[in-house]
Length: 245
Image (cartoon, rainbow, N blue to C red; front, side, top):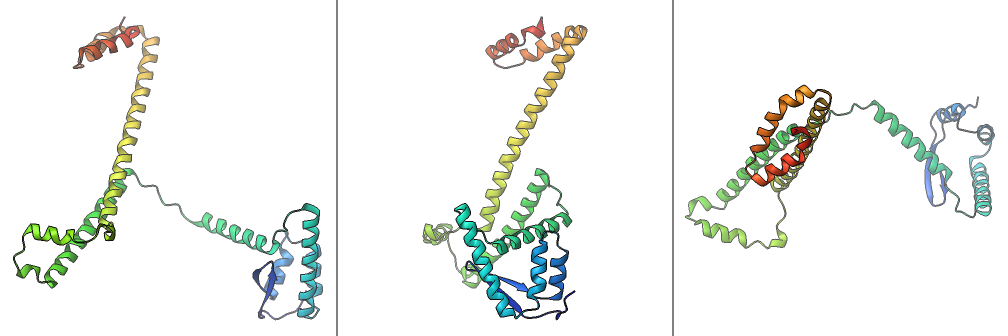
């Protein structure tokens, strides 16, 4: 095993305009020696380079890298990738994946919970903004003078439209409107699905239980007759004629 200082200055390898910092340390050599993805040739070369002058070893390594890059480009006709950068990206992605595995996933909140949280945020921001406007008005001496509502409206209207930005309160209200619209659409979708499932169940029961079908026919006719439009009620009966006879 090579002997070396535990922590030495950082040497920099310049490759295709990309600078990658590699810490030359005893720990790094041990990690490379135990890494199964590192080839035996590279492990042996690192041991040999450790016995040489660092600057000479750096020149030889850069020359070898340039030769292999030219060989790749001549044989494939494509620009050679940066192996150091690719390996570093792989290690970073692997570390991130490991970190994400250890994290606990937040429980997904229901629409009702999200609406309640937004309502609390809107109330908090509205109270804060109202208090801020009152402080500004008091400091400007508005409360010591009699000002009509029309005068206040003209005062706010003097601000150019292009300079007016949506406040946090307005953004939260828009978000609330969008969320409620999505919740309504989702509820309609679920209601339609419930009706389809229930209707499929009743159809299956009518097909296998004639007595139940005969018992439910009067109730079904009465239900269809409750529609306020006689033409629609007649069309519905025609549609369900197989279950009414």
